[in-house]
Length: 157
Image 1 (cartoon, one colour):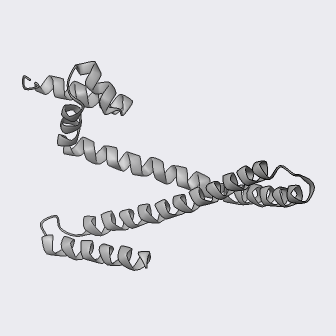
Image 2 (cartoon, rainbow, N blue to C red):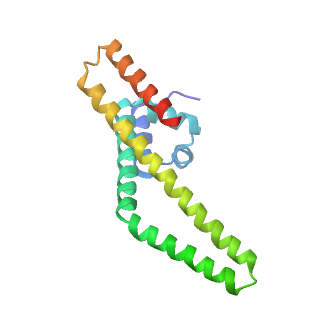
Image 3 (tube, helix red, strand yellow):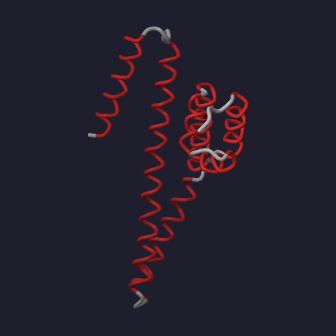
């Protein structure tokens, strides 16, 4: 395959910024998906901005979910209460099991989102600490990485 020109690379990056899909951009430009990925990630500033934007979107979603947590918990409690009522009055055990499984799945998803929020908080702290340090201070950056790894390992226990 011929080497891409700077203009082609900029168009690939622009298209990816618009749709956020490597495959779609690859089809549009008739190149391999890995080529698109390589071009996008080779532009460090763009890759950094994309990562930051993705983290911001995730944080916004988690914040919105957190605002609605009380409503979700009320619905969850109402669902459990209704299932208990149905246990006494129905023979549709399969339907009750499906409803209970759905509620448990939703609660599990909520816990996963809480964990994701903690992960984002750690990443923010990591970025803040690294920004305070001089970029050439590899030893200090290494210490921050070691500290974060220690926190994550202790959190998992």
